[in-house]
Length: 155
Image (cartoon, rainbow, N blue to C red; front, side, top):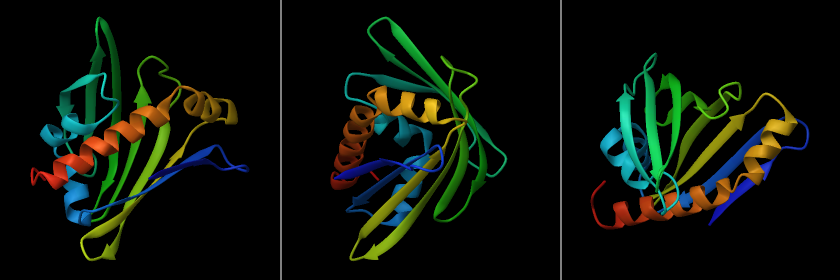
């Protein structure tokens, strides 16, 4: 189960979820563009990578589509470590809404990992707009696809 919570004091969204996967598998799922587009977002979209340079100082952009609608996202990798990613995240439909995201993988042992994500946005209004956008559907359906990729041995 995915836990999504808003901080009451800072415009931050925190996401926590346990996976039956190693930290290395989850890191690969988040940094390998061919794997990333297989699981990111809700079931109703398809995604393709425009560019992807998953290293400290690199950048990325992908486009998701549903029917005739396209949604583009881009950002910069500020740090890519062994079990941590720090990046910016921008939905191009709202280019002034840049989030700073920190993600880290906590090894729980026995092939299980707790993923923590923290997204700092520029205002409480921006944070609340994200939460009201239906993001939980994309998060939950995307992570379910990620679970299947791991279970099928594709990661």
